[in-house]
Length: 476
Image (cartoon, rainbow, N blue to C red):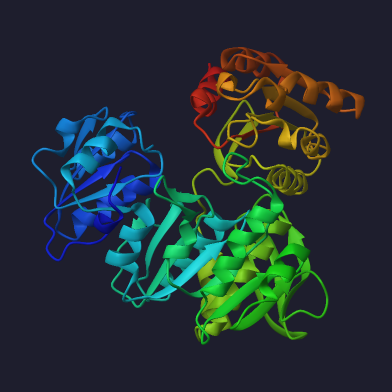
């Protein structure tokens, strides 16, 4: 059992060891520690490219597998990722050796956020895109922000930056912190300005219901400083409810009338989304973003509200947003072969699937949209969203559902059924099929797609490299 008294930062640190180092956030943290001059080592059960190549390129020694020997020689501090359980052999050795340890969010906050003005982006949807937009516009304005984001930002070629400026942008995940701290990560990020995009039920493996999710966000609202600010999407009634308890300024945004910030004259194409932003019903400026969709216009509006609070001009905002190059795996066009456009997107929650497909259908109007969906998250592999998914694919001309993997870890009564979803979609009048093999999906697409079709692949995982394999098949 870990001693809570050792959950702290020692006064002198030279060697930092990260358990679970190959995760997106932990790998980025290793890079930040390395840039800050620390000796960094790590361990993970899954050591493979691209993260293993990245860590090797920056000189981080990574051990495959968890073992007590990985803590020899003794590091000065151990950062424990949230993939680590209390029964992990390295975690057991960590307790036996009485080494100082902290969680990933604690380490990020202590070493890289503490002296900055923290801008935290939270909510069920849009966190990665908004964080990336915010960091990019601040950077293009010469403000050199620090950031930690859950996706690779095209402008930087990575998802982290220590930053020489006074701002730090943190994607505020509501997932739990570590096995010894079951609170959400965002509580550690010292928010001065926080965006809340939406609050829906998600992460069914750690939250019992929507009330439990709301409880986590209420904790975020309560830790806001009196001189801070919450930028909240009031189109979501749950967000309205939760931020009503705030002891700081609340700035509302959305499509609803009577808000502090609102959208008008929105136009969507494959190349861009343009809109006008109004502040207190007065025109603030015209803006454009090279990503399609109503939800992306709202993401921009949240960023505009924060940047106006920081004193940036509408002209600088417009230039920064216009130059935004996107985020990997967010409506990312992976290639075009035989006239078929292949798009990669992270969407997995029913709301994000619906919004993404709606945006793509509007952007590629008149072209057949084929949605390929892999239920891969802890929530989407459970039947909690079984019914909700039925109404999310209406924008697609064809729907292909992959049978989810690792269902043996979920009680039979709680498992999601791809076959049932496909039956329900067919009864809804949609052309839908399901497969249990990625190769079979590629074979089907190769036979059935034609020039002008758009294939949107929706998954929060690698999906067995389906994007590259499909493009190669189409090319051949």
